[in-house]
Length: 200
Figure 1 (tube, helix red, strand yellow):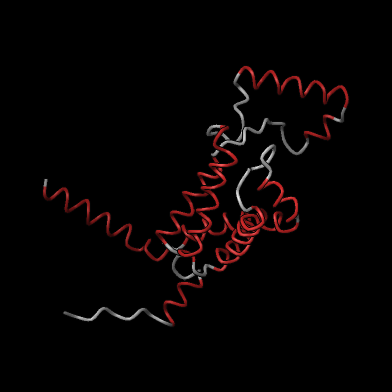
Figure 2 (cartoon, rainbow, N blue to C red):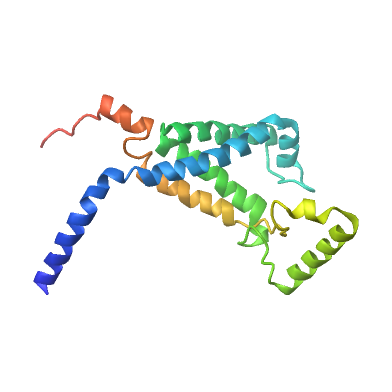
């Protein structure tokens, strides 16, 4: 048994040790995936700040958050500036924290009441019925071929799925950092290495 374990670890180390040089690819992929998501979300809020503030504060059709004049710009600029930091790989661990907070707030205030799924299950009977009725109306009164040539119609459920997924990806970046070789953090750490711990 001991020889089998040793053989396993010998094989494991021989195969996986060279992959350590590629361990920056995973955080890079996460950063490149999240950066446009937050860049678009933040820039959209900034471009329509009056509407964003009204949506944050409105208790009838909005989020009913307190201090919308403060929270709306804070959320918008956190997303926009955070996206730029993610893209550059700069202060990735630090910027992940406020972005995680925005995802947590979004999940609780916007999506929580809608369950998990972002898109409704089209095989569910009530969803299929509504989708079928919508398609019939579009076939009769609209240019259905033109409307569907870029993709099928779906019913947006608006659940917490995307917010939770982005939160988990940001949590991974908080733990991993920006990654080796392809992040500003890596080069800054090479130029200015942290002071070594004093020996006892």
